[in-house]
Image (cartoon, rainbow, N blue to C red):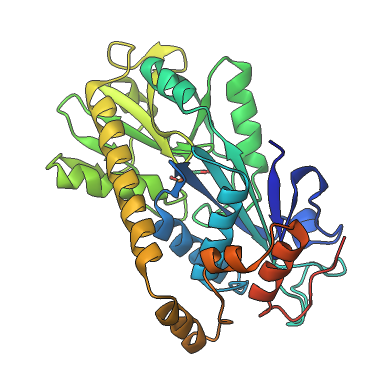
Length: 348
Ligand SMILES: Cc1ncc(COP(=O)(O)O)c(C=O)c1O
């Protein structure tokens, strides 16, 4: 089945999806993004990712393109059109397209929204978690605002590639004092010999992972000792267990660091237990949320949109019934839905 992408209110074939050559994400990496895990068709940690998206946009003074609910509906429609059961949804919001100039463009320039969906082989991920991954440590060369989820990822890309070239699957980045900040695309965790769960506190030095946050509440709910503090590579090597968290792999055990085994060199029992606990908790919350949204009266949702200044719109189900199954008609529906934008999207 061919993939479908989302570009500024339109659903288009993935291989025909395009943005403007002077979109500021291309010229300046002037954009933020989010990645949601999708399990059984439901968005995992949905609210957490939307809240972080709003925060990242706010830090860069980019307007939220439309309300959270409208964006969520677009993502669900993307999932539906791609017939995605298990995988990832990527959403990017740039400052928009404008003649190249470092300073922000005027207020008439509207953010550009793109989204893609991709399948993940869940069985392969489970297999990987059974063996664990190797990490390679290296200096953190990123900028001072790693808390903002921007698409400016070159230092992360170089770190991941350097790790890959040594046979490792992730890079653990270290600050000037030798403490681990985080992974190139994940948060870093250890379990001390005493059984305490340790991860670096949220600050400008790391991206405050949504999986990380959910896992903290899962761990606390289970009465585990949790310490939010930096740890060194030496402490990680002396740890009982180590793992990473992110939306793509949830929890993934780390079994070697710079070629040396962590614990007994196999995935730790607490890591494995937490992986299941995280997954159960996130999937249950996602299904509960989906069920709540499906039972919510349309009128109440529309009313909320009116009071928040968003356009009223029918539910995805209603629109599906109303629209013939023609992609262009469907696209028009979503263009109307996203018509808070002043510039009407072009036909390509
Ligand atoms: C640098 C970095 N840290 C942490 C994370 C984990 O964040 P999340 O759990 O929200 O996926 C990511 C995910 O992409 C990341 O790129």
